[in-house]
Length: 90
Image (spheres, rainbow, N blue to C red):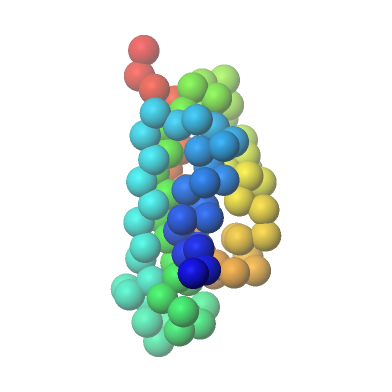
C-alpha cells in the first residue's frame, strides 16, 4: 500500500528535526473546489512543529528549513502548507 503524503511528511520531519511536538493537519476538505485542489484529498496542510533545532533560527529560517526537509512535496505534490514552527519553551 502506498504511503500517504501526510505519513511521508511525518517521516521526513521526524528525521530532520526530532521534534518534541509534531501535528500534521490535513486542511484539504476546507479547500475542495478551490484553486490547488487536485481531488487527492491531500492538497492543503497545516504543520505544527516544535524542535530544539529551531531555537537559534528566525521565523523565516524555520519555515525555510521545514520546506527544505519536505523536498519535492511542497509545490509539486501539495498545493499549500501553513507552517507553525517553534522551539521548546525554556
